[in-house]
Amino acid sequence: MARRAKAAVSFALGAFSLMMQGAPVGRGIEFSSTCWLIKHGRDWLLWDAGVPESSLNDPRGWSTLPKLIVYHLDKSLTDQLAEIGLKPSDIGLVAISHTHGDHIGNVSLFPNSTILMQRAEYNWINSANGPNDNLNQLMALARKLLGTPRNLHLIDGDTDVFGDGSITLISKPGHTPGSRSLLVHLV
Image (cartoon, rainbow, N blue to C red; front, side, top):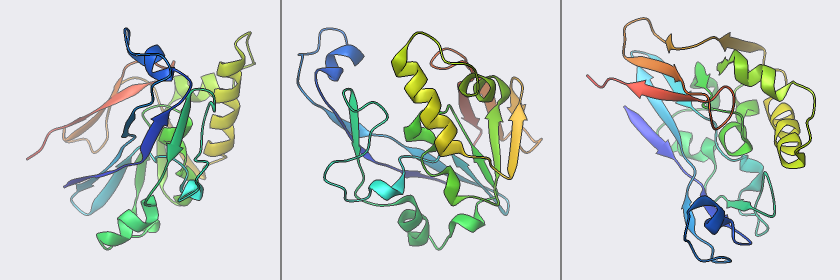
């Protein structure tokens, strides 16, 4: 079973043109920033943790880089879990694709879950600042949103989460140094 949680995202100040070559400057778009819930036997795995639910119904929205992207939530992740009879404490594993704020915004909702993250990603957000202020800001926000998870499990390379080939985390550095993809074999 896989379910998708979503947040509406609005681009500001011509960011659409930065994301898609040839797009009109200054024109906003809306799309979903998703996280996925996967059931494996009696275990629940959440792929990414979405935009912080503290921004729910905030007309100003929430942003990692306010001049670029603004996120607006119309439903919290906690409410979406409740709709299917779950609480954050029911989620045993939270796997992180990468540490941008719209992917780790609700990690703190899962204090007892095991957080699965690429070691390269963890090392990157905890490295010294460089010359790019936007990257420095993203890394600082990632450190704040991640906090110090009780059960942080750092991974190197590809990982078969349950040891049966059903869910594999695949290392795909590029977007960030520790980015990865999720491969799910449905039965």
